[in-house]
Image (cartoon, rainbow, N blue to C red; front, side, top):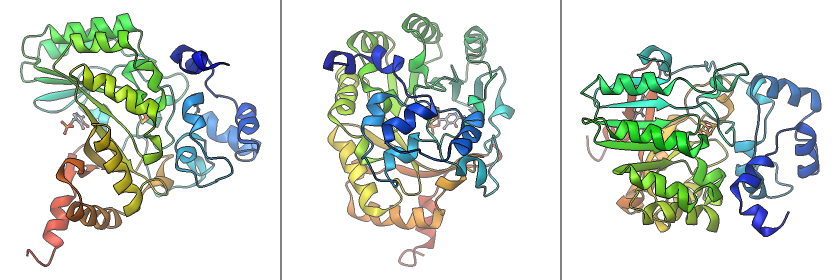
Length: 339
Ligand SMILES: *Cc1c(COP(=O)(O)O)cnc(C)c1O
Ligand code: SF4
């Protein structure tokens, strides 16, 4: 491998780490006992780009990068009662792959494929072998066209930037051609896990379909690297605003200093912190959940001492498909100075 290979997203995709043996060799240790690893990845497969793997600090079992990408036995052994689909997304699906929960916008799961499988993912139920890789995009376009109340379409996944460029271009173009669709939004973790994929030709495709907003997911300040900063800068340069949706994760960003470094770092690379999500009660991700009183205390402290441009809304997606609710309102009510 030379430098040109490393910077080539196709090389990164071809060389993703996907076997236990490879993982043990690279970590210079078995990540977990082989039998237990097999049990985890039978239920929740793994895939790590060499780039993302290179951010792991050797020898640190509590590394925040490692936590997000290396399978952990707790995914199948530890439970606080998490379920496969806590948000009951399948209930609000008028056509397969399209969730219409809020009147003026809908969310499309354009593919279930990702370049890296984040261990905390709230859609990990969809990774299971045998699940359809892609729901028919045509039916989703028809639904949006027939529903005049929808003014914004969020194209998510999985990761929509795993789609072939031609498919993505045509899909965005078809949505854009619907007169009542005013705004498109892409939800993708590619700038964080495979930043070299944000190439000039890809950005050219995206910019054709503006107004287009791009939401990504940085969870740790260690993910802010020259490569990921450059990927975001390319998008911003093309007139595509980039925002960030983090997930509050135990051992990764649930302390004041780390969260503040993350938010400052994002502002420095022109990425606007948008949401901080309370980790959903998802089966296989319970070990990442942080008590929300702890989260509120941390965010309350941060909001008193930090520029407004760095502040995400701390939200919980209320189980049972009831939608997002701000947790800051709660902390305001609980604040004795105000009540
Ligand atoms: C989060 C979400 C959206 C987008 O909501 P915003 O508050 O606009 O970011 C849309 N649809 C569904 C189903 C969602 O979960
Ligand atoms: S990129 Fe998003 S959808 Fe894919 S595994 Fe990570 S959190 Fe889940």
